[in-house]
Amino acid sequence: MRAARNAHWIQGELPDLILGGQDGLVNVLGLVLGLVAATDSGRIVIVGALAALLAESISMGAVAYTSRVAERDYYEAQRDRQRREIDERPDEKRAELRTAVAKLIGDDIADHAVASITKDRDRWAEALMHVALDVSEPQRTGLTRASVVGAATAVGSFIPLLPFLVLPPAAAAVGAVFISGLALFGVGAYKARTLIGDWRRSGLELTLIGLGAAFAGYLIGVVLRP
Image 1 (cartoon, rainbow, N blue to C red):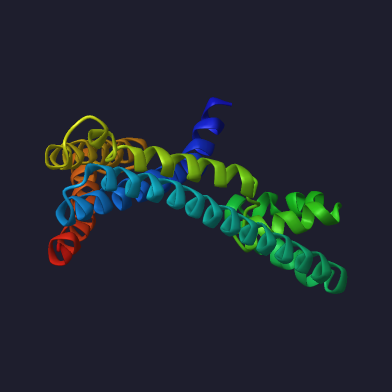
Image 2: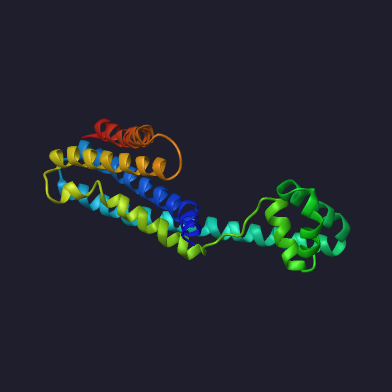
C-alpha cells in the first residue's frame, strides 16, 4: 500500500508541484527584477508581483484542468474504439491481446490469462488499452490537478515577492535572487533524490535555468528604464 502511494505521488502530484512551483517562481522573479531595474517604486513592484501571482496561478490551474480533461477524453475515445473493434473483430482483438500479454508473462500462461480477461468485454478493452496501446486511465480529475498546479504556482510565485514586503527594492532584489536560487536548488535536488540522478547536478541545473530565465526580465527593465 505504501509503495502504491509513493508511486502515485511520484507519477502524479510531484511533477505537478514542480511544474507549478517552478513556473510561478521564475515568472514572478523575472517580473520583480525587471520592475526593480525599471523603477524605484517598491509599491509598483509589489502590486505587479501580486497581480502576476494571481493571474499566473489561475492560468496554470486552467491549463492543468484542460489538459487533464483532454487526456480523459482521449482515453475514453480510445476505450470506446477498442470496445467497437472487439464487437466487430473479436478474433483479431483476442490475438492482439495474446501477443501483448505473451511479451509480458510468456507463452506458457498467456492463453489462460487471455481466456480469463476476454470473458468480460469491458475488462478486455481495458487490458488492450493498457498492455497493447500503453494508455492508462487518468487517476485524478481535472479539478484536482488544477488545484495542485494552481496552489503550487501561487506558493512558488510568493517566494521572490517575500523580500519586497520587508526590504527596500534594491536590497529586496538581491534577497529575491538568493532565496529563489535556494528554492530552485532544493527542488532540483529533491527531484533527483526521489527519482534518479545526481542531486547536486539536478539542483544546480534547475537553479541556472530558472535564474537565467529570470535574468531576461531584469534585462528588459534595464533597457526600458526611463
